[in-house]
Amino acid sequence: MIVLGIETSCDETATAIVRDDRTILAEAVLSQIEAHAPYGGVVPEIAARAHLDNLDGLVTRVLDEAGVGFADLDGVAATAGPGLIGGLLVGSTMGKAIAMVHDKPFVAANHLEGHALTARLTDGVDFPYLLLLVSGGHCQFVSVEDVGRYRRLGATIDDAVGEAFDKTAKMVGLGYPGGPQVEAAARAGDPRRFDLPRPMRGRPGCDFSFSGLKTAVRRRIEALPGGRPAPQDVADLCASFQAAVADSLTDRCRNALAMFREAHPQGGPLVVAGGVAANAFLRERLAAVAAQSGTPLIAPPLRLCTDNAVMIAWAGVERLRLGLHDGLDFAPVPRWPLDSLGGA
Ligand code: KG4
Ligand code: ZN
Image (cartoon, rainbow, N blue to C red; front, top):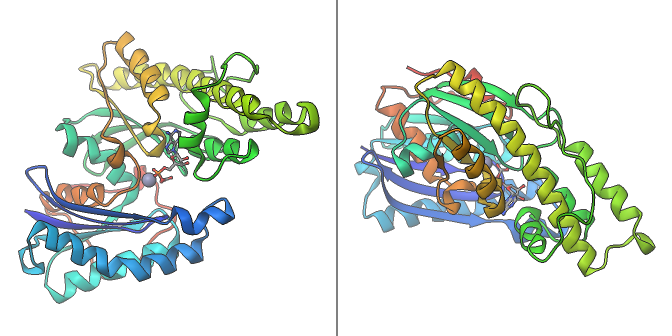
C-alpha cells in the first residue's frame, strides 16, 4: 500500500510518500520561517498563500523522487485539523482533488494523530504506549491505545511548552522560532543563576502550566540593570528557563507514567513527539525519568518530530489498512482534539 501525505496546518508545506511496510519513499518540507520571522510568529494569511504557491510543486517532487504516478497510489491523506483554517483548506482541497480525479480513497488526517503514530513508523512500536506531545500549540500526555483510540491523561492549563520557549526567546531578544535558539544559548549559561518557579511540581495528576514561568522570566529581565539582558544574562536566563521546564516536565512525567501503568500493567514505552522533542537536554532528562521506572524512551528522528507529511501519510496508511477513510465532503476543523477521534 502506497499513500501520499499532505501537511499544511501551520507554517510548513510538506508532502511525502510512504509505504505500509514502513518505508519512506520520498519526503519534502518547505519551511516558511523566513516569511514569518519579521512578525515574530506565524501570520495565518501569509501561511495560507505560501501553501498555495508551493504545494503543487512539492506533490510533483515527491512523486518524481519516489518514482510513482498518481495511478500507483492506494490513497491520499491530507491534514484536515487542528490548525490554521487557510492552510488546512489549501492542503485538504488539494488532497480531495487528487483523490477524486484518480479515484482513490481520501483520509482527512488529524495532525495530532500524525504525531502520535509516528513512532510506529520509525520504531515499529506496538500499542499501548504513553505519548508526550510537546509542540508550539500542544502540550499533553496521551495514552495511545489503538488507531483512533486516545485517552488524554493531562494537558497544559495555559500555554504550550513550545510557546513558552518562543516567548522566552522573544523576551531575551532571540529570533523566531525560539526553541532551538534558547537551547543553543543555554549551553553557555548557568542554570542556577536565576531562581525560577517549577510550575505544577508536586501536584497530583500530569497537567502542565507555563504562563507563570514566562511571567517570572519577564520579571527577572526587568530587574536587570537597564532592564535589558547582556549576552551572558541571555545565556543564563535561557539555561535557567530550560532547567525549570525540564524539572516541571520530568515531575509531570513521573505521574503520567504511574497513571499509564495503572491502566496498562503490562507497560509500554514512553514516546515523545512534537517540535520541543527536538531539544536534546529535555530528551536526556525525560530518558532518565523513564529509565527509573524501567520504561524505554522512544524519540523519532528530529525531522519527524517537527511538522512533516511523512507522519500524515503514515496516519493514512494506518487508517486505510483498517478500512477507514473519509468522504470528500469532510470540512477542515481548526480545533480537533485527539480524544474525540474515532477508529475501527
Ligand atoms: O511540532 P512543531 O514543529 O509545530 C507545532 O507547533 O505543531 O513545533 C514547533 C515548536 C516551536 O514552539 C519551537 O520553538 C519548538 O517546537 N522547538 C523547540 C526546539 N525545536 C523546536 N523547543 C525547544 N527546544 C528545541 N530544540
Ligand atoms: Zn505539530
